[in-house]
Amino acid sequence: MSSCATLSTRIAPDQEVLPRIVELDPGFAELGTGPGMVATVSELFGTVPLLACSYGHRKAPGTPAHTGLHSDVAHLRGLPHHQSLVMVKAAVALTAVDLDAGPTAVAPGSHRTGDVGEHVRVTLRVGDMLLFHANLHHTATPNTSAASRLGLWFVFTQPWLRIFPGYEFSTDFLTAQQPRIAADPRLRHLFGLADPYAT
Image (cartoon, rainbow, N blue to C red; front, top):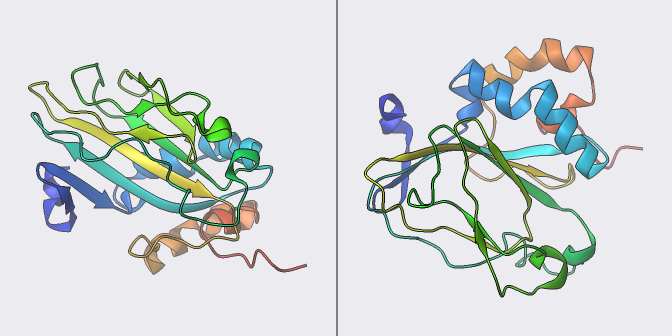
């Protein structure tokens, strides 16, 4: 990810985010928008969801945790998050995420009960994916290892939500997706090209 450093954004000291990661490498696009991922998240949502955000994340060695336990959707008022699915997050490990590498910690069941008592640090091997309900309380943990932790993040939402500001797909990327969309028009939802209110 260092070759794209000029495009990255620092979210905290020693942490970088590289937006629209699916546009930067065909392999990343396949991970986030390929048949395997689309089938998995579509089964969860009951429809093809919107890819509202994708980014690469680098957490340098010695980086402290930059968040505490939180839900990514609790601020969306008026929705029964414990009974519904508005957003799912998928994290793919590009480097091993051992206990000292700053793994994401989750509070199992908290997306349904709100109970954030115990939390578990999720370790990943290279290529493993952590997929979780965005109302599941989770937190960053410190990277106390000697190596950067690298990962890809994909955020899927109900198709009636909007793409996160700053993460909109480029015209060139959408043009390149047209053959796939022509073969499976449902993918219009994935790329934010469908009217979710059309009847």
